[in-house]
Image (cartoon, rainbow, N blue to C red; front, side, top):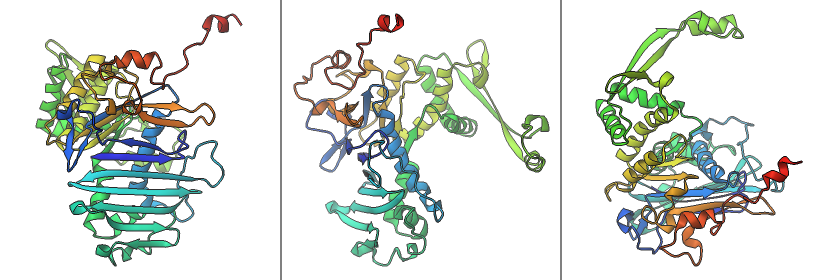
Length: 414
């Protein structure tokens, strides 16, 4: 589970913002919270805001941390970390990231700071048996470990560089189970979906439906529950060689010859209805293609207690379909730790019957610095539980909406 995430000096985010999935004292929908020790954890949350207010940059910061943990071990000498500071930040300013999460029932706290494209400090703690314990701390002078881990990260001394995270190095060059568990949270349990890059998800789904009958049946059942009219899908994967006419002319002859020797997978997917069938990729709507790309990973996330972060989940989905998917998530058994956090413009979801106030978040730009601020509805004063949230949001009561006082007639008359 994701418990908290904070960052500063990342794209439009200048001053530190904090997102928390720890439930507040509100007793609304308590049955839909995930119990963890003395805490209750939100199963889902949604983030609203005007275009350009920083919703996607918040998601991007999480992606940045995930990718850096996974891939910084591959950074070469002289290769800086692709830091994206705020445009108004001074030269040499720091960017900080911290995250709290739960994996295998244990709470972890991890964070790092970047300055001039290099790591200046980093830490990893965990909380076994209710006590916060140091795994490692790092500064520009080196790193130290907690008592339990003394000498266990010696193999990292030669591979740790200023452009690499110690978590990335230690997970690959040591056998410390606590570090490996923390690393696997980022690799396997924290899943990010970007609607602008669905190809990998679609390929995963097609392979799953071709090889896993249980997954295919689950997808078709969900499709039918969503009222699509789809009865079945037939996925065929053949191996074939690339033909020379399929290669672009600008490739060198050497590279062409190399490609012509390789085999590729040719995938066809026929969607079956009562009286006809369609080609998934050529004849189906964008919405149906998105559902087929999304449902297999979504089922995997729910089955294996993962956390899904999604930018604009509603893209290409009908409002009723979006409601159904969210309700499926919100009504998982209390023993299931799956989570769904997403940005959206769908104001119909601003409903007390669906979400608590601490599940509804907003992004807004400060007028002077053009810097993103992030806050929840629960933080705002004088917001009643029985209030019509969607009406209050559109009217500007909670902020986080674009200025709508533009006189288009005046502009067109210029």
